[in-house]
Length: 244
Ligand SMILES: [Ca+2]
Ligand SMILES: [Ca+2]
Ligand SMILES: [Ca+2]
Ligand SMILES: [Ca+2]
Image (cartoon, rainbow, N blue to C red; front, side, top):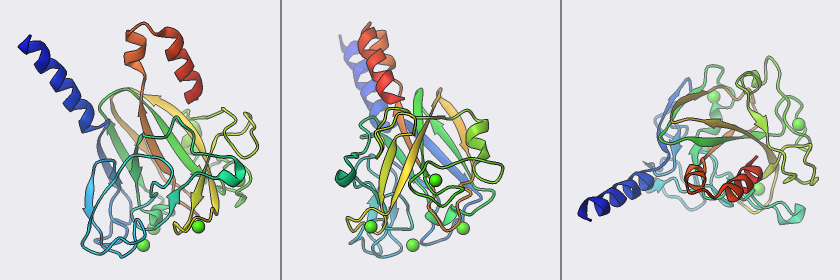
């Protein structure tokens, strides 16, 4: 009995430690203040610019990255945030809410050799949130990818989400996340959501190719392995359908 309890306690501890085990950033601005290296859920740094990453933050305050959802700050070096968009009947997609995520520096958007080596501790679905203006400058249409605009998304086999969770309720367009620059309750941009499954281990994300616009976001959600193991096949299938 004692051994059983110990086992349960250990697995709960592992879950609390997080899915994201490590993030190694190379090729970023990597400044001592402002555009510091990427942070992720559970990580704490000392605020070095007032009112970043959230309004009211004071220089010297500790800031700990929370979980993804409406109001989650996007970058270490801005006060921008992801936000529900009631005017367009566009809440943050439910499959992203509560996920772990990476906060990078927005000023890394133009760094040609930017790289994030992300280590996850369990199998997970990784979601890339990409500024709709990539390539064409138009925030009403999804980003497009080519040799000078995040071609690696295509080459690595990332798939557009297709749940119709966008301003047009159109499953032929990727799901969207609204974006509030300056955290002042006005939405200026929309991001489109792409997904790919990864096993436990390390994967690599590359440059944003988006100078003058916004850096991408990364949200990580564990695979529903435990549901499948419990034999809840129908529920697991439903969850999988909602997530892609
Ligand atoms: Ca800044
Ligand atoms: Ca830069
Ligand atoms: Ca576009
Ligand atoms: Ca705004």
